[in-house]
Image 1 (cartoon, helix red, strand yellow):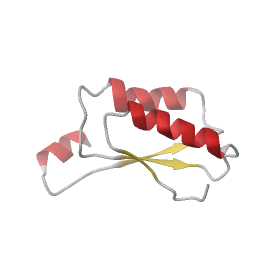
Image 2 (tube, one colour):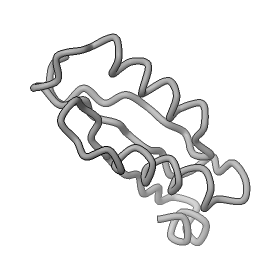
Image 3 (cartoon, one colour):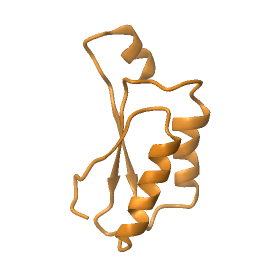
Image 4 (cartoon, one colour):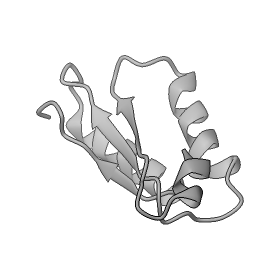
Length: 85
């Protein structure tokens, strides 16, 4: 994704990931590792969209999780409401 975004000025590849109550414990650790630890600096192209699962019950906790990931991310990070909270 980053290689394509650097190579072409008029193309931007983004990624969509899920957040929710019923995901395995390692899901968030792997996501944070990918958007923080594996990147050496902030990138302005290549946004990350986090989609909350409709089946999630604790909306406040989902927003806290989103905020934590957004603050740690070295990519632009957005909440994507493909499903209603």
